[in-house]
Length: 212
Length: 318
Image: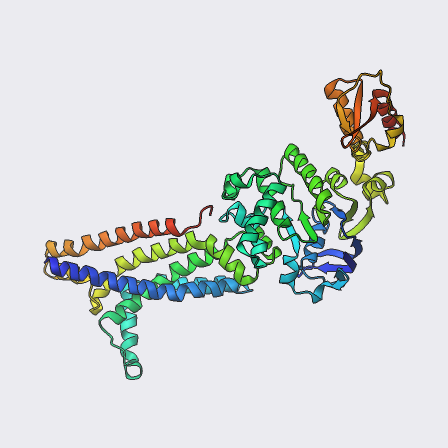
């Protein structure tokens, strides 16, 4: 039992963190791109549209992804079960919170500060690096934390498509009405989420420049 | 040094901020741009470091057309201090002050040396303040750092947009005095935006009074108070005229009326370059009958109360 628990927990972490990493790689450059857009209302609309992903129920999203993977199998040759659909679902969910908070963070850097940075002769890139990004760190980290906790929780659901993780134990417990299995899946999942949240808070504290 | 030739600025919103203004600022001169909010004074300032571009007309910097100078290079060569202080909260005092030298890629040692020198110039002990964050400073200290940052790379031109606007009157006066003392030493070309007449009178070698995007009058403080060009300027000066005249006029014209009789008891010290107002206040505070006037370290003579009063009466009558 212990070894299977450890294996499933690690698997769970692997899936969640890879999904988070992918979401981050999509969301952060996108946030940067949107914040550089001259047309702000349009940037906001794009942001809204992307946040609509969040409204798709988890189960429906998993089904959608699997169906899409199956439908495109003749062209893309991607597996419709296992890690891939799981990680794909979770990544999609993670994009919006990270994107929204990172965009908000860059946007909320106060106008007089940008003005003075420009007036002192900083280039756009220098303003981003020295003024806007340091100011956005708390917001960006907040977004990552929310997305991370969400992903770790959601990850129990993706075991439906055979991606593994602690969801396996929970579903096994559900099928056989075995409380022991249910708890063996639930408690570590909750524990991992709490530890992640705590770790991110520490990390943010360390990363955040003083005075912001 | 800086010349505006028929400059008009219309914002994309359609608001006309400046209409066909022309003026020039000489090297080493402090020009105060004075006017109510929305009169275009800040826009005029921001045109100079190309934070905004003119709709028509041309601006010359050292006889070079501004639009031909790369904005980044231009800005690094112009000091800039604003009302909102604009210190970067995540950078220490030293880092804030070193921004432009850093952008100009000075050596680390030179930057540190300069930062310490600057902090000393603005009256902050580098040992105490270098590593502090802006949030750990008082309003006056922040403003000092803001001024130090504007001076950092020793730019020939400094733009200041209500740099002392957020301070209480006492702090404000103190910083104005310090600024004047610094400016007397470094002789920069300064454009100083303010809505406060007494500040303009105090700081400016000349004052440009602005209203609705136009320069209504450009003159020395004395000319402005004595011969306001029109009703607007007159109204702007209003009832403060006498007080301001007392601020501008120094004891210098009274030099020949000083008594140097050995028998007269010496009074409290005052400098020949002090204003009439300052002298009057000194009389009041010290309850003295006469003041000992010094030109720097050199003793000149005694100023009796009646001589000052007589001068004030002529001011009132004019």
